[in-house]
Amino acid sequence: MSTRFALAVGLAAGLTLTIPARADDLADGVAAIPGAVEDVRIGGTWEANGNSGVYRIVVTRSGGNEITARLFVQWVAYQADGGTVVSHSIEIKEFAELGVDIDDYTSESDSDGLAVYIRTINPAGSDDLSYELFVFSPDDYRFGSASN
Image (tube, rainbow, N blue to C red; front, side, top):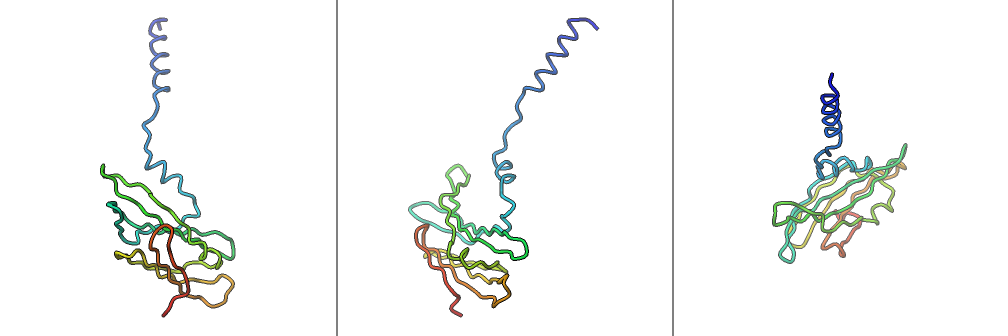
């Protein structure tokens, strides 16, 4: 093999290794979702100040024998270019303080905001209860025992 050919092959191999792969921000973001995130649902739609989008409800779980959940609500905004962005994200801290797991939940939205109806499982074995969450804005929500 000639020196010139070996040099050309070596340069070609070196160039191949240095070309960066195309980044895929969406795939990278999905891969970065923590394992504790166990449920993500669209809860309804919203409109405010000329913007619109969907509510995203996120449930995380942790624990060994006694699994407990945390509950988050996000405002996913539609952008003019067809993309989306999370414009607000809140944790319902009062729910986390209960130390229970979520068995199931349903949601609906209207012009006033988001309503989430939550059925829980108490890992301590006491009564399973139902709760209501009414979200009016990122700074205004009401959480408590279900009224029915």
